[in-house]
Image (tube, rainbow, N blue to C red; front, side, top):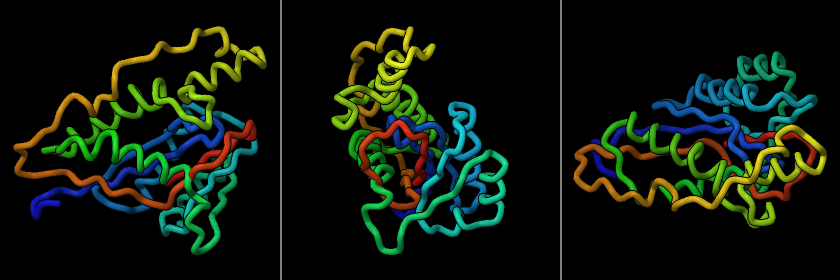
Length: 203
């Protein structure tokens, strides 16, 4: 990390069933507004009943405003046990993938550039094309379509996405930037088996 590097913190909401990122946000602070922004994106992609939102014990997730928003959205908050490094493993697994496949290969001059790169990675690569061994080597979107086809959901009528080019990160490095954005995550990690019970995790 360079002295003049600007810091940006991403937060996300991950569907524990399909590993799909259904909400995410990025900011230069770690206040409750950051996790609220990620949570507010999720209902646009998911409208399940009796959903559970699992997180660590960060002050952002224990804040009154976050609890109120969960109540308004019909979401039941859940938190991991203290000192348990495995309880939030799915989100940590995603952040490890993000660092390996994008952040370690690129340098960003501005926060906007970093935000656009993460958007490309999540919406253009990870959700539609990134395969997971826990999902029978399907991407999150293809896994949901396959599951939907079994239950005759409308999404099952769509054909699985074809294998794509490597992730956007492979396009090359930005070497000359005087200021480098360092992406800092909130929360703990996660890596559980998929379950048809609707649930989300955040990191």
